[in-house]
Image 1: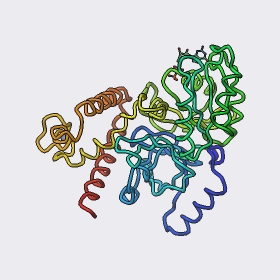
Image 2 (image 1 turned 180 degrees about the horizontal axis):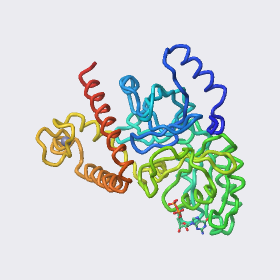
Image 3 (image 1 turned 90 degrees about the horizontal axis):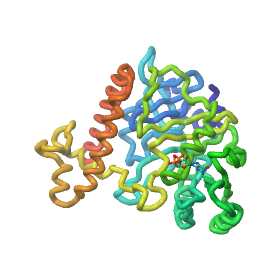
Length: 360
Ligand code: GDP
Ligand code: ZN
């Protein structure tokens, strides 16, 4: 797979040459094409590698935004034999899409990097809400991507062109498409907005038809990873994100974990970002604290003092249970590897946060 087909271009080539000239390491460029929480897969021009961020990269990361995410272009240090690659550094991003965190603007959670186009999907059925579209447009602009409004379920509305005009007047200059994923109409216009080598993502509330649309687009699509990694069939997680190469050459980042994002207003799960709890947990006495009954648990202390609501902890625990469930689903070979890498990563992130707190 050529890097160009994954969106590589002259700017990245330039940035990478500069990096090489400043480093004595045999670095190799690649793109993060799969992310399952901290577990990253990077595609180079040769093959896919499991990769984890170097200690140096973690150390210099001042916030979540500085950590690698799906869509990032990175410089890898390859292992001499098999094994995981070290993610040495990030190449400059064109932009990132963040989920707004509970702690406000600066506590966001990274969703994807280097998006060229963000498709804001809203249904032409009961879901339609112009103010929501306006809010989502702001988020899209902030991500550095070009927003495109997609009015889905066009087959359910009598006057589609009136709605298209209405949305166009809300957002001058923003392309507005109407389509029916179910009937397969209007898809060509969407493909045209995502030319070969450009990276897009579909965002929108639950039920607007994103999965149906993705399935349409993915017909015959290839995964951007070549099958070097352990077989992971049947791995249906709620958290992973993946970069797909569509048959026409456009690239789509998708995954059940990234579609809703709380981009559409408070009602859609802003409470799903748990940066605050993870930060608290860095102060728990035991590094494997489950925040149930352990002594010295900073999370329970925060609940007791009212700094953290019980409800919020509950939703966090729910997510943890879902993740534990998914971990059991993972095939055993992949699972051992996954666990090991996750453990290392979690440890490094914790150490990093602790060190930050001590002020070194
Ligand atoms: P998601 O939650 O955004 O991924 O939405 P889904 O793709 O799961 O679709 C939600 C529901 O809308 C399902 O029952 C779909 O069959 C239906 N749906 C999706 N696309 C269309 C469409 O273009 N027209 C109609 N009438 N229904 C659709
Ligand atoms: Zn704890």
